[in-house]
Length: 104
Image (cartoon, rainbow, N blue to C red; front, side, top):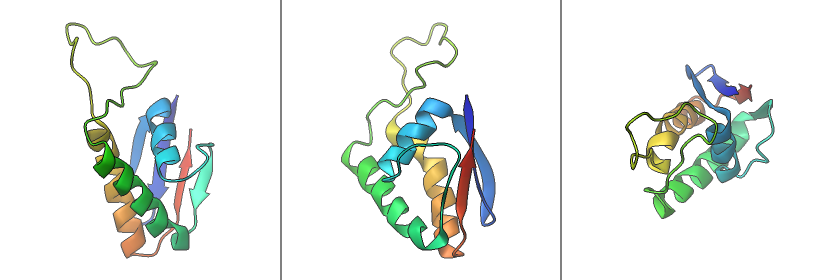
């Protein structure tokens, strides 16, 4: 499953579903899809996500049901790397006071 995040302030971002749900939970959301944040709630969600990334930037956040990594054993994508596009989207949405929506 893929989940796409949308806001009028930034380009759409599509992520693996399990990664996106984990990031939603780190934002303080239930992780349900579809879902939305009202513009007034975006700064708090952004702060929660940034705090989680700062606390554990190197934690592995790889999709559990993604394609096999042929010859890539030992390689992982960190929480900081996975969260960066969503942090940028939330930052843009907060700056322009826009809602954020997601759906899978």
